[in-house]
Figure 1 (cartoon, rainbow, N blue to C red):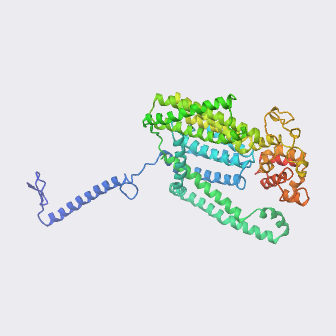
Figure 2: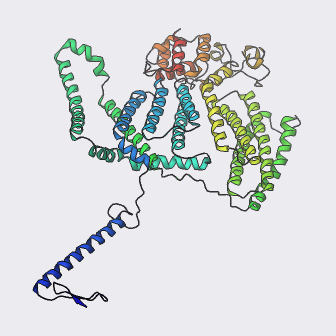
Figure 3: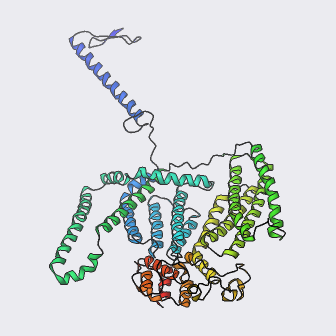
Length: 601
């Protein structure tokens, strides 16, 4: 043990310390303080290291998820992305305010694609292969929307455009090549609802962006925004005062002021606000890449279970399919006593459609949750072919029913659904035989193509064309109480029919469901308007405030009587009046334009 100059005895072996003298004691305290300070620094460093692994505040059990490169770029590009989102939301309000099916809808769809593609450019994301399919399909749905007046088609066009947009966004951020229908639907739901948690991102990203910008520039931007908030209401107030002060100026601004409503302004501002935050929040959540990309293999079930269930069903289907082939397709069917072909057809097609849908679900579940088995594949293949027979049988029954009772919207949808189901099963059979077949992409393409075909076909036009081709052209039949018209009065020349009623329709009387016809959209105008003119309808009733009221006041039709051949046209004109009330350049619709031109010709 040695003693240093300050009187501190140091044992090199045991590192013991002895303090001697007054000066030595002071120096010793300095050494202890320094050691304590060093210990505090080390402790702080350790604590800092621990906190770096957790959320702000150091809460245990909440590890910080590192920001993705896209999130960092979004924060750095806040200024171009946020103004684009604002312009996009203003454009949405312009296109869609009180205008659900105008010519602006396809432009709004194109604007949506432009906004997200521009945002992708700032985020360093390039469009992936296959993106053109989503974009073209969305644009075609947009075009179809402003070409029809059918409310059902308009609703599903918008729903389809939304689902395609969600799928398009997911495709850009994730590898969706192995995703199936369930994974897509779950991811779309997660993307939609989880984006609500990012509604505050414009504020947080804006603050982060402003801290990195020049203060002078920031103040100018804020002053400009505050000036708009103060100036716009002040401008409207002064405008009202000046209009009340001068008659000439009031006349100039009268039309403008009559179109300014507080409720309308609130509606527009609400639309702009909602879409701005929604667009930015959607982009912000996508940048986090929180949705799991991998698709685990769920085929772990024992195939014996699936073989047992599907085997029993397939045996039943084989017997049923044999009856259908022999009866409906080979003409050897003997109906039970008291049954007509129309009754037999009406009783069966909905049930067969339900069984066919059930079979599609069963086959997809067996392929997704049970281990591979050659026997199971064989049974599923036979079940699929039996389902083709059921689909054909259901379609045949529907056609028979239509020959007796003509067309309705639901009957067209059933035939369309059966065609779709048959094509979906084609893809299922191919994947059973070839496991790497991209079934979901095939199904998406089939649904998109068939739906676009239905949308552009205008079912209401087809219904009017077919049914009125088999209706009486004698307007006196209703007035004289004659409801059953001979075949010679039917105008059934469609499907190659003759003047005696045609070879396709089997009804013993012409079409008479005029109550149904009055609810058709403007899509049916090219057929309905000439028919109404042929019946002697006064088409100037459309120019009145209410077509039905005009008809009653001019003794053209008695209000409250049966909406038959004489009165249904005025109800249809009233419906057209309501749908074209705000018709103009922004709300231009092809189907409504054709209807207006046909009536006013």
